[in-house]
Length: 361
Image 1 (cartoon, rainbow, N blue to C red):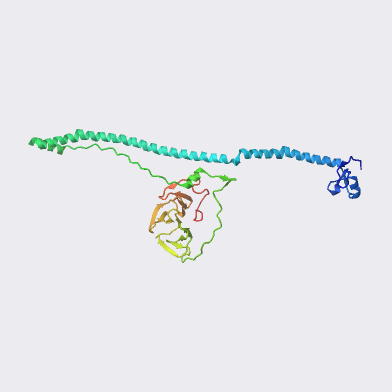
Image 2 (image 1 turned 120 degrees about the vertical axis):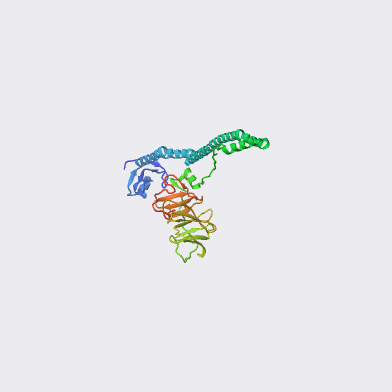
């Protein structure tokens, strides 16, 4: 082994310096006494080569820290200071979308007000013309004739009386017909929170819509057996009662939590599907035979609210009193008086629905 300059510091042999490394003992630094005492026969390595290798390894680490790790951390710190996770941009986008909606509403309001203002001006013009024509007829025709009649009756001769009576019989007076004034009223539309939320948009968290949460595992509150078949169950506002119906039956049943029938409504038509209004607690149902949508009033009377174009299979009454009807070929949203509501592309559902059932509404 070539002679090497010792490096001081052997902890076992005071005053002895390191001269090599022991490869057999994980590159342990050793002095000459260590070689003969505890490392005899082990594989040795040059201390200078080992130190050079360690310096290269340290230099690589220094390069990694200075060129990669530290610049990246500094960049991350700057992003945290400036971006804030992008929430400010999202907030600004939400406000911008909301302002656009408000502007559209203001424009719609302005249009309706302008239309009413123009109609009011037109009616005033027509009213003035009617007033002028009627006043002229009153002063130039009717009042002079009244004065002449009174004069003849008071002091007229026999000739005057007979002549005036003949004139009255042979003369027809057609008073001017006033032009009809247009009447105006305002019928408010149904304010749909669901449609407003759909127009405003959604906040995506990590690219996912957080509005839709997984349905938790249901908890069985009670179990019971009925004396009649049923396929659909809708709970009432109180939560301790339910309405049951069967797709081929003409009755719906109100039962308590133990299954006891509290009320039976004879509908006289086959009930396809039922839904309970979250706001009124009244039962709605659809009929396939005549494509009607009906409501059971508080007194138990069945009232047909409107008819749909296709055969209805199911329906749902939303919290804002909209009627969602599942029909052959799709799903349509209606107001309670039967006016179809457009909800944009895809309408109420975003997937294609061919034959919606009560499980899909």
